[in-house]
Image 1 (tube, rainbow, N blue to C red):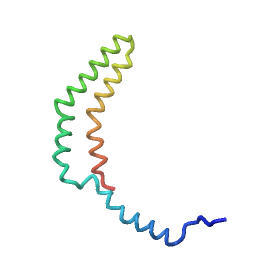
Image 2 (cartoon, one colour; image 1 turned 60 degrees about the vertical axis):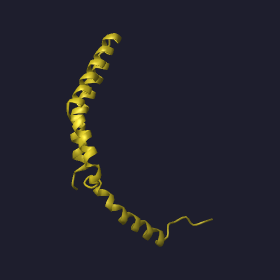
Image 3 (cartoon, rainbow, N blue to C red; image 1 turned 45 degrees about the vertical axis):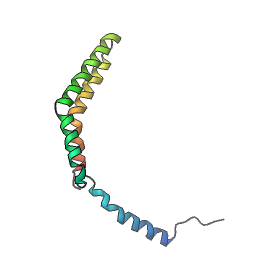
Image 4 (cartoon, rainbow, N blue to C red; image 1 turned 60 degrees about the horizontal axis):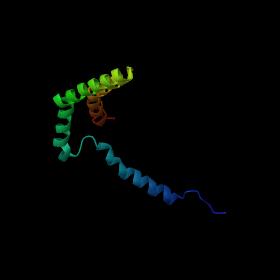
Length: 99
């Protein structure tokens, strides 16, 4: 029968890998080369494009709801509109949080 317990050298190697991987925790504050793309996408979502998409989602959901005699598609449109408004702020808060 073969012994499958990890050895001390395996534990040391794993510890070194984990210590080297801690630099990835700064992912929300580095990478300035993507700043312009982030700003552009954020402006689209929170600007008139995002508002137009949210209104279109509600109108489409209301139209489908009327055709199917069900309020659920209209509610899906409202939920989508709420996500368009609040999710960018939530994501920004998560990515820039300091532990």
